[in-house]
Figure: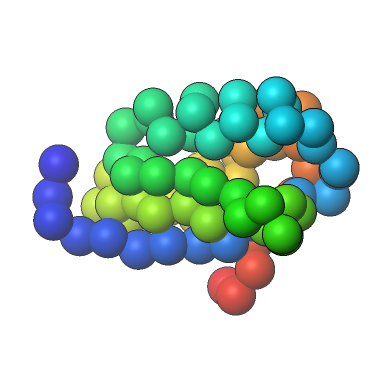
Length: 77
């Protein structure tokens, strides 16, 4: 893995419970090129994903989120 890091915020459309949120964070964090994925307890509809831009890109990240049955939009792109 390279030493490059970027981040993106994904707005999650659904209201997810704790199990769904933590499962999504865990599953995304395990993927190659993703350093971390987390939601703040006070802004549970926003997920910050830190990733290696040489390994993955924001659209691939959004596709991974949506593969979990969650709808979302990329913020700030």
